[in-house]
Length: 166
Image (cartoon, rainbow, N blue to C red; front, side, top):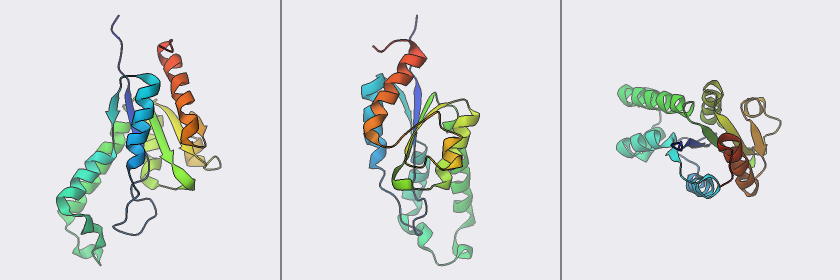
């Protein structure tokens, strides 16, 4: 019997409520990916932020620093919209989604990705202190307060999904 390699999305804030042109560190993505690899073995990694980061690299990080929305190139804005919507929809095609919202960070993009995951039937583990947030609680299968608790939940998911802890 051929073993299925799960597809895993790691989602979290890119800009959230930070000022224009300011972005959250994305180091958490590689840290969580390492934890997933350790807990479940081989997996296909999907990073929804990759599309947006590639476009940002093309247009320059100061793109959002422009003083007026009317000065922003409409074609570029349209590309950002398309890439964001495609990336968000793709999250719903994963087997497992790990959501990272540290220090009660609110992120509308992450909320949309959570909703896509729920619509797609993905199993969602959220690492957050937002246990009182309806958007997060209604789209998460499991919530943990910090990354230290994530490994055990990933191992539980592997057993639940594949019937073995090996």
